[in-house]
Length: 69
View 1: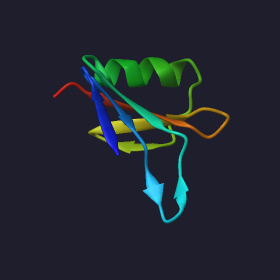
View 2 (view 1 turned 30 degrees about the horizontal axis):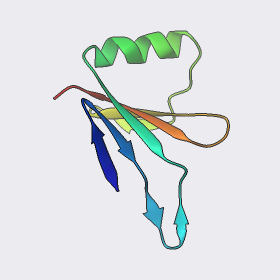
View 3 (view 1 turned 90 degrees about the horizontal axis):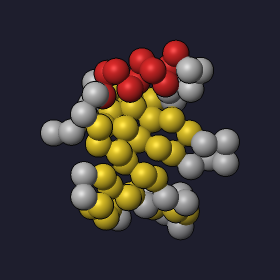
View 4 (view 1 turned 90 degrees about the vertical axis):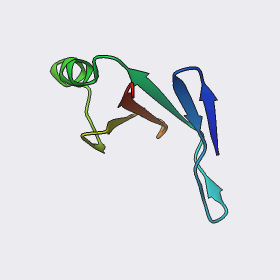
C-alpha cells in the first residue's frame, strides 16, 4: 500500500502474512549529490539503482530516496 504525501511516499509492503513497519520514500532534487554526501558521512547504502537508493535504520526500517520526476 502506498500513500502519496506531497512529493514523498509512505509505503507498507506485504509479503504473505508479514508486513514491514513502513517505508518512507523521499523524492529529492539533488539525488546524486545527496547519495554522495550520505556515503561520505558513513551512511551505508544497502540497495538501489539509478532510480533510487535505500538505507536501513538499525531497527530494520527502510528509507528510500528517489529523484524528483
